[in-house]
Length: 349
Image (cartoon, rainbow, N blue to C red; front, side):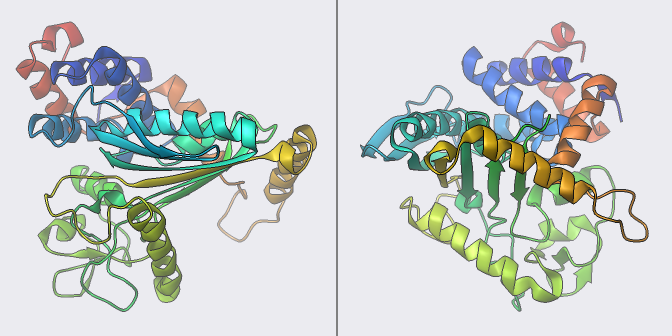
């Protein structure tokens, strides 16, 4: 796999998106979010997604330059129609609007509908945490054909339905969780397939309901399992709540989008820490709590206990210097797209 510096990957991603018709500003936003996902180790939401986004633009499932409309609002709430624009662009606008209201009213919440894939969910709560808010976001996985079977089932009824929460602190990296409510994100399965790797048992069932370690079985009629293994009812419960927040509250409904169009519904909320406690005190205590977790004696086979978000921060530091691994299959797709858009020489692909 080629090892590519982040700046070059951002340039490649942005230029290819522009080739597909995205305005330069939108292409830059998508590229920033995508490569930031690679930097923190979430390769399933990284550069591997660019060919998929371009395909969605070409079949008009994503509309570059789409208007972003506020269709309903109060002093503390906002409902946003993204008109099928890039999810990164729409959701970044939505979080900025939520933060703006939160600064005035202490709490604020927003729903978003009709937008493309929003990528790494943590990106948006982290924006708010950097401005002194506790923040959360849920997403309903686009109402695309469902991939996750509820606990005890063998047929898909749920999406991977992620939830992300971020906290302000004085640590060098953000404190957050960003988790699918399935055993693994759908993108991680696709990434393993692209890299010719097996997956752990307990992630996927075959179309016949059997355990498998072959990621290719998912696209052959298999299903993802919910988070939790033997206590997967907890993952199912979380996924159901996310579906209600992000599918029903947004007005998208549950189940599969009848047009087949990826349609990420999102719910986000922010809470100003200063409405509850002095921000500096809270940030310091979150920092001390994180160190307290770090100091936990380790089990056999473990070198360290990490606070939530620490692994991503450390990975970002390393990859910012060393570069990002791009699987050969994705690198070829990027090269083919560069040829198609006449920028292969410009991008050295």
